[in-house]
Image 1 (tube, rainbow, N blue to C red):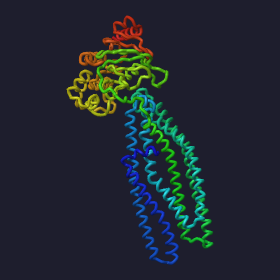
Image 2: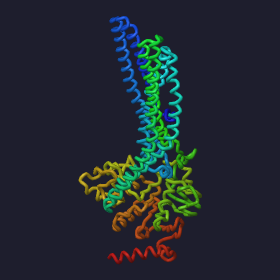
Image 3: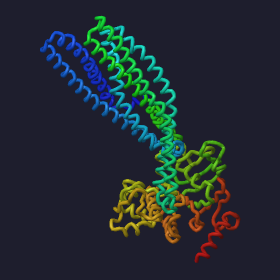
Image 4: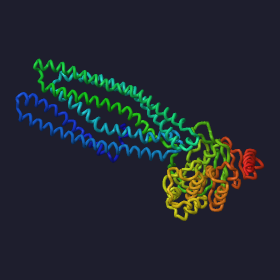
Length: 575
C-alpha cells in the first residue's frame, strides 16, 4: 500500500489536507462528552438554566463544525482516492503497452483486465476509507483515552487491558485470511477469462448450440469465487464478535466499577456518563481500525497484483544506442531457435534463411509447424531464444522498436478492426495518408469496390471487431491498412484464407505489380496462393524442410509435392 502512495502525484496536496480536517472533526467530537459532563455536574446539579443553555449551544456549535470538517474531509478523501486510482490505472495501462507478447501471455488478458478494474477499485475504496477513518480512529483513540485518563485513571486500566487482546486477535485474522483473499482474486481472473472467451466466440457458441456448456463453465467459475469468498469471510467475520465481546465486556466492567465509585463518592454521575462516552469512542475507534485492517487484507492482495503488473520488466526493451533507420527489406535468419517458455522446448530449431530485398516469399506448412512464430520474430514481437534475425543487415534487437515496426507491416491471422468508420480503421496504417493513398491501398487489396458499394463509402461505420462485414471483407481491409504503412517488409499471415481464389489471385497480381520494391512474405494454406513466389519455404515441426521455387520443389520435395497434388485433385473433383 505504501508503494502505491507515490501514485498520488498531483493529488498529494489534497491527500495531505484531508487528515487536517479529519483531526479537526475528531478533536471537536471528543470535546462534546466533556461539555455534557459539565452540564450534568454543574448546570443540572446547581439548577443553572443559563449555564445549561450556553453550554448546550456550545455543544451544538462544536457538533456543526465537526460535521463541516467531516464533509470537507469526505470530499477531499474521495477526490484524492479517485485521483490515485486514475494514476494507477494509467501507469498500469502505459506499462502494458510496453509489454512484449510474452509478458501478456504470462498474465493473460483476463487477469490484466481484472487487475486494471476490480483490483484498482478495491485499492481506491480502501484508500478513501483510510484517508478518513485510519486518521480519525487513532486520533479519537488517543484523545478519548487522554480525556478518560484525566477523569479516572484507575477505570482506564479496564480498556487498556483489552487492547493487547484485540491486537493479537486482529494479527491472527490477518495472517490466516491474506492467502485466502489472494487465491480469491485468482478465481476472479478465471471468471473474467470465461466471460471474455464466451463473448468473443459467441457466434461459434451459438452455431454449435453450446450455450448450456458455457453456462456450466460460468456457473463453476462463479461457484469457485463464492466458495473461496466463504472461506475467507469465515475468518474475517470473527472480527465483529471479538470486537463486540470486548466492547460489551468493557462497558459491563466500567459500569460495575464506576457505579461502586459513585456510591463511594469518588466519582460523579456526569463523570461516569462522559467516561462511558469516551469508552464508546475508544472502542468504536478500535472497531473501525480492526475493520479497516480487514479491508487492508483484501487491498494488500489487490496491491500485490497491481504491483506485479507495474514492476514487470518487459521482455523486449530498446537498446541503449538504437538504430533509427532500416536500410532495406532484406531479412536473414542466422541459426535461429525459439521457445515461448524460454526453455529447451523449441518451436523453431536452427533456422538459417536469407531473403533479398523486394523478393516475394511463400511460406507453407502443416498446422503447428510454427509459421506464425517465424514471421513474428521479424518485427520483434518476440525475441529469439538463440541466434539472431537481421532486417536490412542489422540485428532487430539493435533497432529502435518503433522504427523497426514501422518498417514491417504484418497482417495477422486474426483480423482486428475497431469500432469507427472504415477510413478511421485504415488510417491506423498511416494517420496522415491522403485520400488518394487510401484508395490506392484499397484497390491493391481488392477492397475499394465493396467499400464504394456501401451508401456511406469510406465513412461506413464498423461495429466493434467489424462484425457487420464478412470475413473476406475484414481481411481485405486489414491488408489495405498494412499496405498503407508503406513498409519495407510486408507479411501476410494466412490473411487471404477467407477470400475466394479469384480475389486472391487479383490481390497477388496487384502486389506483384504495385509493390515491386517491397519484400513480401505470404503464409498460405493454398499452394495456388504462393506458387508464383520467388522462393517457397516449407516448414515442418519448426524446421525448414524445403526451400526453392515452385518448379524446383515439385521435383525435389515430397511434402510440397503431396500438398500440391492433393489440393489440385480436390479442386478438380469440386469442378
